Length: 140
Image 1: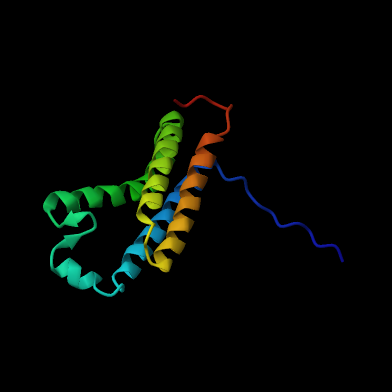
Image 2: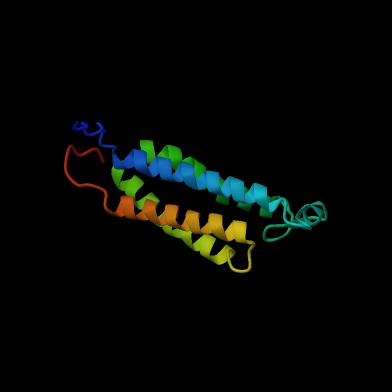
């Protein structure tokens, strides 16, 4: 008995980019959550130690912005012009790849595991944006 192939639809690169940013955000959230279980982490937070030095309104605002951008990219990848979308995804994908590579050395294994997944996801973002198909109606 021959089985018919499963049907599928072709997804536009925008949907792929949006899904990759959403996946990246889930890894960030889980990494930060699991990080709370590292011995001494909560005591350090209560003592005012932040991710990049002493906690201040500025350091927390910067960290919030750093972590908000990937979440916003899940939406922006669907709505901004193709040219802007492509370059935002390439630039921010490379930026977040670098952020992960800088923060992973010396980390616990769970963080390195999630970090490697995040590097792959962010490089996939760059690759899909780089290979954005040409042709069709001009919408820029």
